[in-house]
Image (cartoon, rainbow, N blue to C red; front, side, top):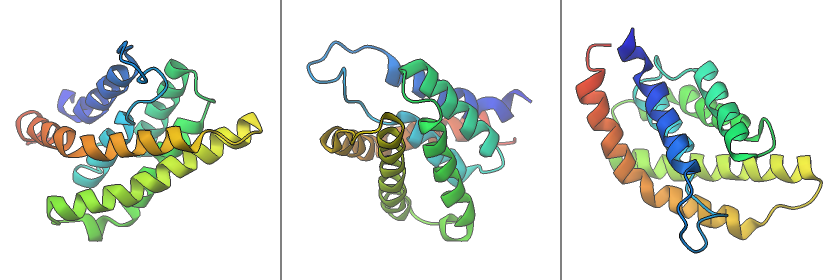
Length: 160
């Protein structure tokens, strides 16, 4: 049973890591969307362990933790999960390069969705430059975190 919780717990840890204050110039406002990386990775490689309920609850937790409009992160992660699960045949057995390229597209859709949700909830246009920097940071970190999550999958949930 504990092995089935690994994707949820590791993604939760990524959310906590992203919410940790860094005290670096400019990093207070802008940071990578680590929850997006976690949910995308597990939805691609272990969709049986990262379902809609997990994605929703992780997004809701992230919204509460970061003070984002309630539901904006949950919507972003639900859309990500939905896209990946609906394209399971495309992702199955593909190389890392193809998966990363697809992450770039899915991440762009997810970032745009969150931007739109935040803009609609607050009634004004959120800063597009901030969203663009968050997206690019997320895209740049995907190879490293994807590799770490792959190691976790190999060692922790190989039989789950």
